[in-house]
Length: 264
Picture (cartoon, rainbow, N blue to C red):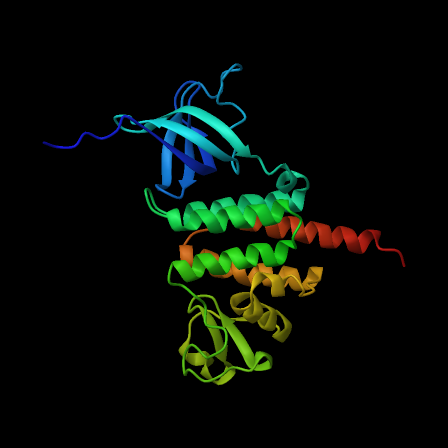
């Protein structure tokens, strides 16, 4: 006799997205440790007296009771575990917070990606906890790249395999690593990378988080690190990341504003 599938199930999850469905319903994208990424329906979510309202905003860590549906499963109950309000408290934190959610969404397929739940929860907790944005999000990016088999090569030339001094490196996001200048004709799209940025990225890739928080990253260095890593993530995913573009726009605005308001 075929074992019957349970009609309901429960899981802890992080909401990583929302989109319109029908009437007052929304499709909620969650990331769960047991089930990975899954799209489920929240009926009546947009109604003023919805019991689900406030528990299913992007970035919310919640406990869900879910009914099995014919096409899409349906949320019956939702209870917030943590909203991470501190991660939404200023524009820079908010944009990095949304970028982390976007990465988790893009790096996982339906019913896969459960292994990304803990790294995502960790980076959100770090952003909300006031840890430096640079080390928090860069560590998450490297975890995603490692888990998906796209770990960048930062010490050896991706063409000849020779060690690459930071001062002599050129960056190739298309090939996923650094290149010696004499090997440039053998790789695809390249761009410059400062020795300071490359040394920091090497540390981000290898050191423990407790060591990384001791690295001082000023605004100009962070702009370069963001540009390099965002370009790599877009190349790996083969798509634009509007959330990454927004992070960079906010950083440029803040750096420009700091220069304008800085006393002579």
